[in-house]
Length: 130
Length: 295
Image 1 (cartoon, rainbow over the protein chains, first blue to last red):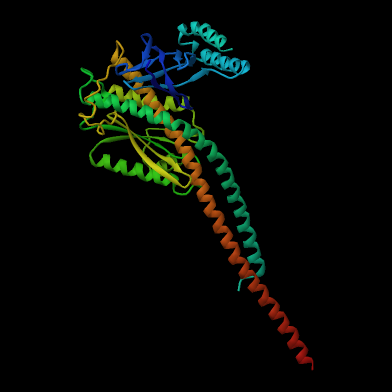
Image 2: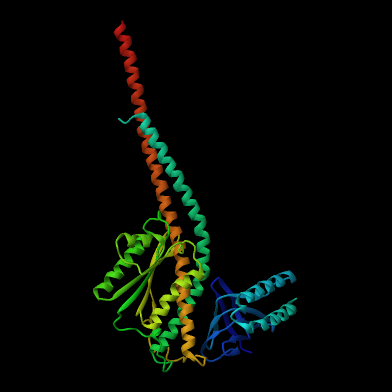
């Protein structure tokens, strides 16, 4: 399966930079998946979770509050304003990331009621990691 | 020859100044490191954001996205009112840092005046505000204590009214002038045209091959929201870049001041020793001539 280059940038630095099999993004009009050789596309993202399927088939989840994505045949560039990656080597690191993510959710909850469902997904993602 | 006491007093005063300038340099060095780190991390994001916006602008220019008539992407032929936003420091003692920005603003001001364009100045940072107040140039809007402590919320709020005015057609262009960080010893002056987005760098043939699709039912809404975020981030980035530049400028200025003080103390010490030697010689001559006269 062909791989795509994925870059996720936040104002505080690069949060993901590497290759992936596929990536699922929370678009404004609903979730959509991107594979390699996707046609050109620029769209806005809303608060939600980005799921990255990595080369070893493992899935990494990143919570974002707002973003814009630019897709072309070779690469996917995602610019996000605030993001927390659910990852870590140990159980405690994952738990900490989850806590940070919940904080981010709290901060955007007021103007986005749909975000509540995200918490459950994040917890599931964290459980898979541990 | 100057009085011994006077010279001593001068030496003391100069070395006290030296202590102050050295301390200020150390403080600036420490602050610079933090500010530089922040600016460095944001740089990539800012660059990519510019790229995305510029590409959209380029494609709109070349009519790849059909039927879009957004003010933010279309070059306005003869602007009537222009917003100029400048960022200076809140504090002085940083060499030519503030003056460089002010000069650039004045030049831009004169250029627009010559073309009979009404200019609204919006200032950030006490030093620039003070300068234009003193010279009786009217400021449309000003905010202090933001450039020393960049705050996303406050900067968003400040720039939002400009964006709204632009979208409402009250303003035809939006410029941002600030002095940014280049490296430890140099600052780089930026005069950026934020709105309408500059698409001149795009050649139409170049992007002919790849079509863009904007995946949204309401393209206008998406572009509007994107433009807001873009300009707001550009504003915030200019603030953090400016802080880093300010600290590097101050560090340098204080380093020069410390060195100057060091040289001054050196010359004063030589003078002091000469005066002391002269005093001893006079005293000796007096004693000897006293002894001689008693013979």
